[in-house]
Length: 98
Image (cartoon, rainbow, N blue to C red; front, side, top):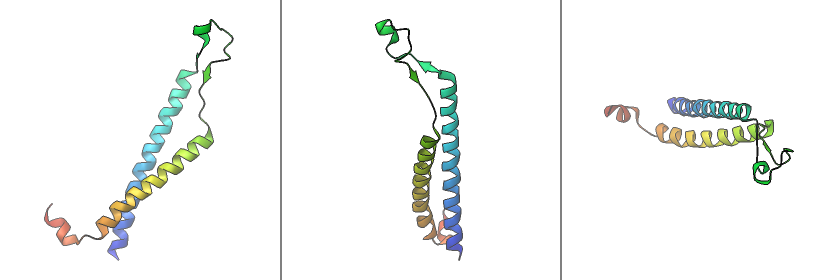
């Protein structure tokens, strides 16, 4: 019974840390998009002032969804490895060295 509790605790901790890191990363990306505006690509090189070759950064919802999905999958898989390892330990043996 306690094995399921340990697994759930490790998985929830891994998921919370993963999602918090993803949220911080998306926030930083949104900040960079807001601050940078458009970046001239070939304008200065060819004396082009039309702005056709400029890079316009945008944060799309589809990209955020795919990134968070991959991030969640990796977080759950890495948390699962730790959870399975921790659930196999004998509690008295694990606490002996601390």
